[in-house]
Image (tube, rainbow, N blue to C red; front, side, top):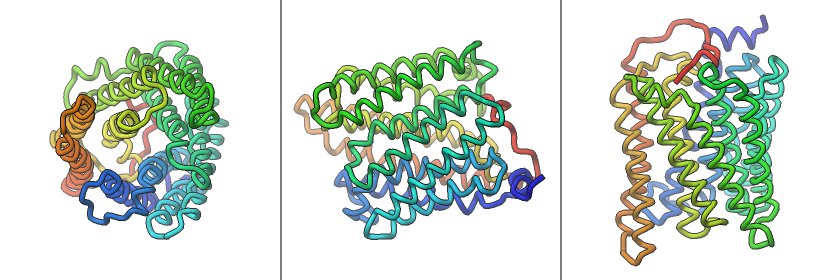
Amino acid sequence: MSPGRRRADGGRGPAPLLLLPGGLALLVGMDAGLTLAGVPAPLASARLADLHGSLMVLGFLGTVISLERATALRAGWGFLAPALTGAGALALTLLPDPLLGRLLLTQGLLTLVLVYAVLWRRNRDLTVAVEALGAVLAAAAALLLTRVEVAVVVPLLVGFVVLTIAAERVELARLAMPVGADRWLVLLAGGVTLAVLGTTVLAGSRPGAEVTWRLLGLALLLLTGWLVRHDVARRTVRGSGLPRFAAVALLLGYGWLLVAGLGLLLGGRPVGDGYDVVVHATFLGFAISMVLAHAPVILPAVLKVRLPYHRAMWVPLLLLHATLAARVASLGLVAIGLRALPIWQLALLGNVAALLLFLLTLLTVVVTGPRAGRRRIPDRTEIHV
């Protein structure tokens, strides 16, 4: 057994240290979001406001996903992926020129593609291939961001989070999925990818651009509907404790992705308030809710700490979705002529408060809970949430 494999199986290795830049990207990204929206923020940096999307999606989610996959690989070189994405997040935060940070993010995500390639060679798992495709889209987005605005690469970022999370759900709940689920996943993921590429190539007001956005919405609806129909969360939501918490978070996340897909199908290319709804329904309502659902299961495997379920976890979860719903509703009130900007601002602050509260809750539960001993990292197909 190689030293890299022993470290991944036994000691904590570099995971806690590599997670710190991702956590910093989340905190700075939330601050940047407040600044971008004109809400008072601790840093209030116009430079960081322009990096809000990069920090949240590539800096935070990219690092967390890379770290989890590197841990599953059980080889020391795999941790280069989260190390590079974390370094990219730090460079974006600290350096006045974002170029180096974007290049580091690109290198980290390309390394993640290599991690997926090795995982694919082990068992030819189609879910891993779909996750690898998502990483390719993320790397393309990071590279394009050296030349274009973030709005141009939003479809690529959507593809990254949707393909990654969809494949993870099939992988984690494989025993509850129907026969042929992997092939259906590939088919539906292929539809999302084609639509993503179409919207990216036909960016702006080029002929056919509206059609590709509507096709992306349709592809998201089909994939989400299929996941909702077959996900074990529909049964575990009737349970208790962690399974019920995770199921509620999963189903709420699916609900927000349906909102995003429906918005694209009906409205085409998102602009103005529609852009805000689609983007935050996808990256906050869907992606972050999925992170909250899996954190009590994945973090112990990655960080080798015990993270027992606690009822306090419900508070930030429900606060996140309630404030996001209020945020969307306030935009609807503005659209019909009612001045609801204070509601929108309070809802945005509630989004940030929910994420901070969840981080604080996890930290408290870890510190006050029993310490973890040396134990085997569970295979992801053994986890059913």
